[in-house]
Amino acid sequence: MRTLDLKLITPWEQALLNNGRAALAALAVGRLRVQGESKAQGFIRLRAIEKQGFLPHALRFGLTHEEMMRRRAQERIPGFDTAAFTL
Image 1: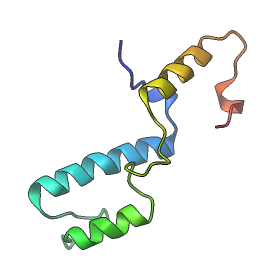
Image 2 (image 1 turned 30 degrees about the horizontal axis):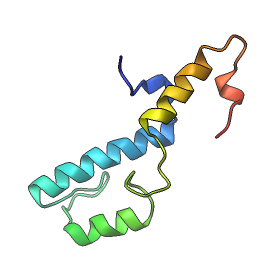
Image 3 (image 1 turned 90 degrees about the vertical axis):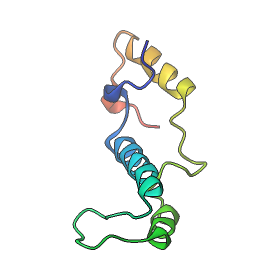
Image 4 (image 1 turned 60 degrees about the horizontal axis):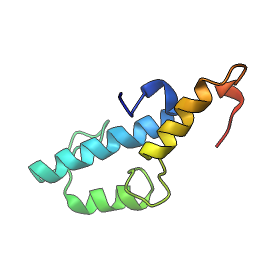
């Protein structure tokens, strides 16, 4: 069973996950490129992006296995409206 079911995560969580993958790639190659900017940046820019809260590495990012299992279980509850549910 897959833990990460994309229909159970919010667009913001998806963006954070994408940014996290991009950050790992930047660490591997030693440079990063911000979408919409033509010039590659160094790690100082990566630290600034992290401080702005655009990476999932902060403690407040709670997309854990347990959270995904909770969302999956709620999805199976008859009459449960995921659009009306807020975290």
